[in-house]
Length: 115
Image (cartoon, rainbow, N blue to C red):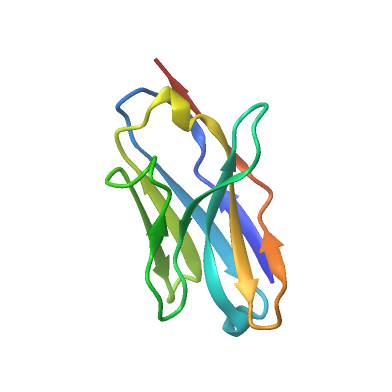
């Protein structure tokens, strides 16, 4: 499985960005996907997950502002981020978990939110 993230950038507080993760390879083995982020000096944290046939989960800090989705026709996992805050500044990583218990990660895309 290969993952390629895109869509990061610089935005002012209150603005929006849309991240996209192109997924290729053995996509039928993926049973969960989503996004993590890592802010400077902090550990990587879960942002949102969208399992196959399960409930979508969000970090409390992004509920009501972020929306994760999957486009099976385009083989992408997307993250729509609205009402961005400076605290959302981080490198965002898409990931995929497979039925054979391996995790795959994209290369990361930087999101910077100015106050």
